[in-house]
Length: 326
Image 1 (tube, rainbow, N blue to C red):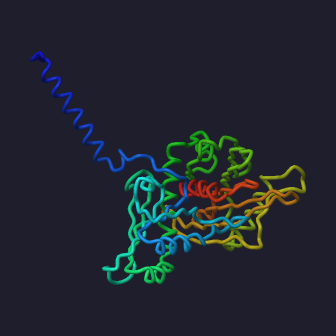
Image 2 (spheres, rainbow, N blue to C red):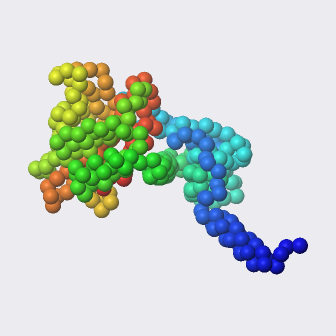
Image 3 (cartoon, rainbow, N blue to C red):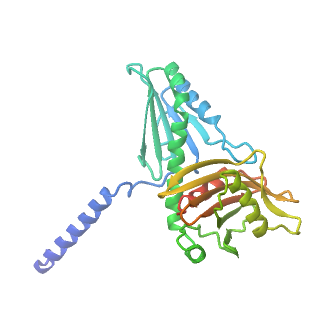
C-alpha cells in the first residue's frame, strides 16, 4: 500500500505528466513524424490514372529559370493508390480526385503538416478528367507558388537552427543596420571594401554568399545593377591570373523584378555568371535593398559553382538565405 505522505507528491507528478502530454498534443505538428524525400520532390496521386497523368504532365514540363542547363521545377512520381502508407509521409503531395457528383469547375485547397512535418498537401477535385484538363493549366502557377513558398519557409526554418553567428556579426559590423542569416557551413570568409564573400569551399558543389553596397547615383535599374555587379565582382573575385575575373552573362540578360520586402523596396536579379578567361560558371540570385534616403543600394547575392551537378536545390537553398536579408 502507498504511504499516505507520498500520495500528494504522486498526484502532483501525475498531474504534471498529464499537463506535459496535453501541451505536446496541442502544439501543432509537434508529434508528427519527419517527412521523407528531398525538396521539390512531389508525389501526385488520385483516384484515376487520367487525372494523375494530366497533373503530372503539366507540372513535369515546368523548368527552373536562370540555370545554365535545363532542370525540372519538380521531381515527380505518380500513383493512383491515393494517400496511403506508401505516400502519406512524402514531403509534397498533390491529391487529385474525380467526383462525378461534383458541380462547377475544378477546386483546389492546401494544408500544411497533415501527416508529417514539414509537408504540404494540395487537394484538387474536379467533376471529370476533361474538366480537370481544361482548368488545371490556369492553376499551374498557383500550384508552383504554393510549393515554392512551402519549400522557402522550410528552408528558412532549417536555417534558423544552423546559423554561422560569427559570420553574421562580421556582416553587421561592416554594414551596420544590415541583417542576414548565414548557413553554418559557410565558414570561409574574404573581406574587401564594402564587400564580404562567404563560402563553404565545397569540392563538388561550392555555395557562396556575397554582401556588398554601393552609392545609388541614379543607377538605372535593372541594367545598372548588373553593370555594378560586374565592377564589384571583378575587383573582389579574381581568377588565377589578372586576366581572369567574374562577370555577368548578359545574353540572355538577367531577369529582374522589384518588390517590397520587409518594408523596403527590393529588386531581385536572377541570371548566370562566368569567370572571364576560364570555363567556370553557374547561376546567381541577388536581392538589392534600395535606400533612396541614404542613396545606397545594399546587395546580398548567392552564387553556385557545381560543374556536372544539378543546381536547382543548391541555388534554392541559398535563396532562402536571401529572404532573411533586411
